[in-house]
Length: 449
Ligand code: SF4
Image (cartoon, rainbow, N blue to C red; front, side, top):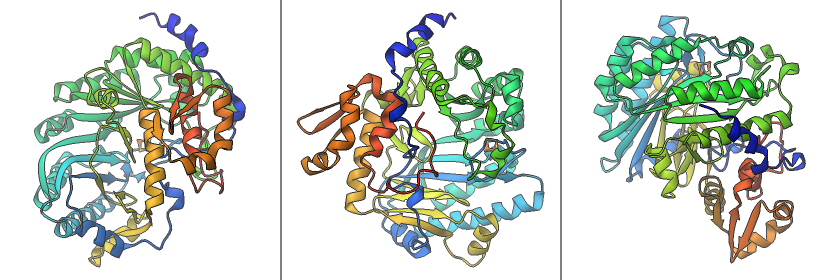
């Protein structure tokens, strides 16, 4: 496939305004964001929210273990180097599943189950099947969409058979880049043939939607290297692609200190890569989903985008519109209309709380009506590119919106704010205008591109 023509048009579509990207902003996988979580929220708040959860529910199960730890990784995960450590964690996870299942009203139906981490395939296939059994015994599970994050380096035929037998239809692979030099620079070496065989195994196992996580802005990465990675991805027929900008925040994520900061592309190069990726994938037939996801037409994520049902949760852009998300496992976050509650991050303390029969929520935030209204605006802008704003709020943010209006990145008409097509790389910055908490430290967040 010749992707050069699409590449040439890239920067005509998106104009680089460095002054608009100077402030780091959250990714807004929730509002308020995790930066607003405090320790006033705990087990009792989660218990109260669970006991009133009568709607459709999605479950997220966190496995915080990996075979090896990648240097760039910001996830809550540990090296899977001791069998007994993993076994104690799984015992606690089973205990949490039973505890939450007891509290949840029988009218709450589980329609989705997502396994993430870490690497869920760091556990054995037998342990995975046991977890599925626990979930189906504890909850009213109704024909669920089951998805899993997979580390291609630990994928086996037994795993593929297990996923097929359980009915997993959606899988996400951590790929990041196919360039061997960049792989070495980020501590994640996985040759092309490994990704190819993993993809084939998943397809043969019946996975109808396979996502590739890719990254730009990596050390030593050039536009040509990114293009080559995108071409391989298209050739392998990934149904979905998440193209993230690497966030280098070694003051927060100490494992990133191993990455050579002097080899990182500057902001202008990152912008060019994001724009290039967008054009190349669109040119290859993918539907842009939000500001950094892409899906083939026919994939549920593309359909949700086109029908205006796209949502955003802790896993990124999603077609999951369940009003309640219950996170299970250390550091997992549960989301209810009026509450965000995060489980204890430390696996030892998480296990201790469960051994005492306590729900392991230790942090979070109550969502006020105002939070919910602002959260809806942010979600509408990021998922649908448009939001209705109350006149008083519009007046309040008029000055902050002026730089975007001047550059024709937004239009306001009869109380509706709409992002123009060239505003995509600025979507998070525009959404941040409606974030009442953002006067605080910017060091916690990543660059908008
Ligand atoms: S495999 Fe995934 S979760 Fe595990 S360390 Fe690497 S990037 Fe992080």
